[in-house]
Length: 150
Image (cartoon, rainbow, N blue to C red; front, side, top):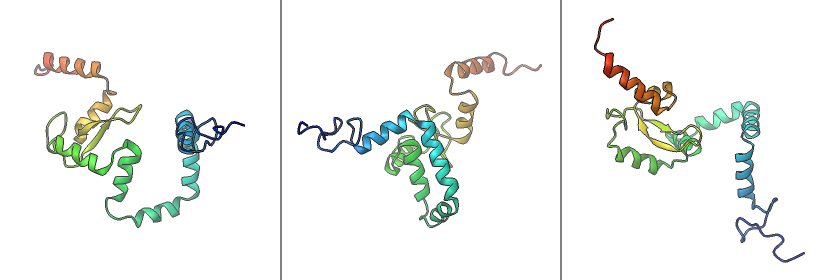
C-alpha cells in the first residue's frame, strides 16, 4: 500500500475516514446528500431526550439560545448579526421602520441571509413566496386602482 493511502484528499494533513474524505468533510457531505435521513434522526433523538434537552435550554444564560439559533439556522455569528443590524441603522431593509424584533430574511433553499426585516415585511415576502414578479404585479395593481372605490 502506498504511504499516502491513508491521507484524505480534502485535507492531506488528516487521515481519511471513508471515500477519501476526512471525518468533518465526510459528515458534511453526508448531511448535504441525505437531508431527510439527517432530519429524521435528529427528530428521533429529540423525541427520546426531550425533557433533558428542555432542562439544558433552561440553564442557558440569556441570549445563548438565540446565538445558537443564529449560527445553526443561518450561519450567522452574533458579531455578524450585530454588524448587519448596525449596517441597516437598526431599520427594516424594505420599509425603513425601526426594528423592534428583527426578522432574519433568508433564501429558503440555502439559508443565505439577505437582511433584517420588520415582521410585516418578512411575512409579506413569505405570502408572495419570495417571488419578485408577484411583488411587482402587486405594486402595479395597487398603483393602478389602489384609490378607486368599487
